[in-house]
Every structure is written in C-alpha cells, then in structure tokens.
Image (cartoon, rainbow, N blue to C red):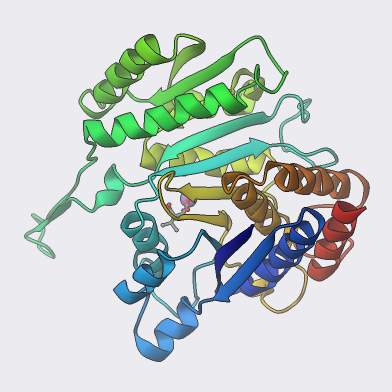
Length: 360
Ligand code: IPM
Ligand code: MN
C-alpha cells in the first residue's frame, strides 16, 4: 500500500513540527509495511509575500490528487490577519469540502491539565465540528460603511443537507469510537452543543435533525443536548460527562480551544479536516508561533498526533494506534512539560523519542 501525501509545512514553526511528524510517519510506514510518497508544497506567508498568491485554484486541483494532506501551520507576522487564514486554510476546507473538523480532547498520562483533580480517565472526548457552514460562509456585508450609521451583518447559515451529513458522521463516529465501543462506559453517547434558546432557527434545525436521525437510525446511541455556554462550564467542571460532541462551525471553533487547554495545551492538540468521500487535511490546531521559529524548542507532538489521525483516517489503524501509544509513553516518561522550551528536549529529540518508541 502506498499513500500519496501532500505536505504543507507552512509558516513559523510549522516546518519544524512537520519535519518531526514526517519522521514519525516514515518510521510507522517502515514498521507497518506501507509506503508514503510525500510531495511538499510551499503555500504560506513567505510565498504570499513573494508572489501575492495564497492557495491558487490550480493548487486546490493538485491537492485533489492526493490521499491526504499534512499541514504544519499558517500565519505570518508580516501578513495582515485574515489573508492567509481565508486564502489557504479556509479555502482548502471549503474547496475540498472537508465538512468535518474532528478534534479529540484527550489528556495523555504525565501531561498537566489546569483542571484540579482531573486525570486522563476524566478528559477523554471528541468534538465533531461542522466545517463548511455557519458564520464562516461569509454571508453578509456592510452598508453605510465608515459612517456613524454603519451596519454590519454576518449570518449563521446552515442547510439541512450540511447538518444531516455532519450528524451522520458524528453518529457513525460515536458508534465506532464512543466510550462503550472503547470499553470505557455503558453507552456510546452523542451530545449536541447548540443554543436553542436564542438561535431559534439555526439550532432548531440542528436539534430536529439530531433527534430525527438519532431516533430513526441510531437508537443504540444515547443522545444529550447542552447549550454551548453550559458546554464550556461542564468542560471545566465535569469533563468526564462527555463522549462525542457535535456542533456547528463557530461554536466548535471556540469550544475546541477550551478543549485544547484542558488536554494540556496547543503542544498536543491536533485536528482533522475531513471529507469522508474525498481528500482530508490534518493539522496541529495551534498557530505558527513565530517567536519560537528556528529555535528547536517548539513541541512537535500536536503535529505528530495530526499524522496519527491521518493514518487512522486512511485505515492504518494499527500504525495509528502504535503512534498514540508511543506519544503516551513519551509524555508519561520523558517530557518535563509540553510547553515550548520546557520539554527537557529539543523539537527533533521529541520526534526521535516517539519514532524510537514506535519501532521498539
Ligand atoms: C481553527 C482556526 C481557524 C478557524 C482560523 C485560523 C481561520 O482558529 O482552525 O480553529 O477559525 O477555524
Ligand atoms: Mn480555532
């Protein structure tokens, strides 16, 4: 088996962490007898500064020819906020119709969480964030811009089609990877996080679709509902309540940053932008951390976990499982901290540790 992987190292510390993810990927490929055929792309801030180009349509077309995409980080201190995010990250998500943003929130052993008296058995859930609709569609505009009467409108947009395909993925995911399926609980549970008390159109649609699909097609999956603000409250107070959570794009963006913090920070949080029928893209969810660029102090575990998610999505479950075990071994036994500069090892040494553990 050979996989064609597009690698976009990107900006800032992106290339450093991507190099470690690639190191681990190659070690896993050798150990588990598959091949990875890597092609690098230079989309990012430097290319934009040089050519004015973000992710051109021709780039999207090229990316369609790959089995998966591994992304480092996008974001450059010399480029105005929004240009690269919209032009590269969001463009890839939209044009490749990566309609799921899968973000596991798992506290690995030895990793410090800011939550008092909570451990790896408590912090173990997954957020399925819808990735193509909502406030992110850019539906809206200004009138009377720059005047005292200026009006700005930006609408949360969802179609039934978008909601249904996301819910279907989330229910299927809960059936396959929920707590019962993993021997960790009585039920596989899917919780909808919404705001049905205020967003009485958009989350009414989500809630009806959620209950209809759950009742008809997934009677084996327990259903829960939380308002998004309460979701934040319970993430902090009772994270052990959660199993699989499904939510819209904007709420998903926000609650997964909170999730990343309770799992030990951006050093370890990874996500997948998934098109189950197409090309998916995996990334560490932290930014490009420009101030650490080139110093060899940034934590590559999030990028390594992104590669792990990529292998899982490609069907290399054994290799993916082994990478996760190796990461856990390294957090439990080696790293002093997950924070940049405080790991007790350099970026490439952490990559070596995971790669060595993996092949043992
Ligand atoms: C994320 C990021 C992006 C988002 C930004 C950079 C556009 O915050 O991946 O969560 O809002 O989705
Ligand atoms: Mn975000």
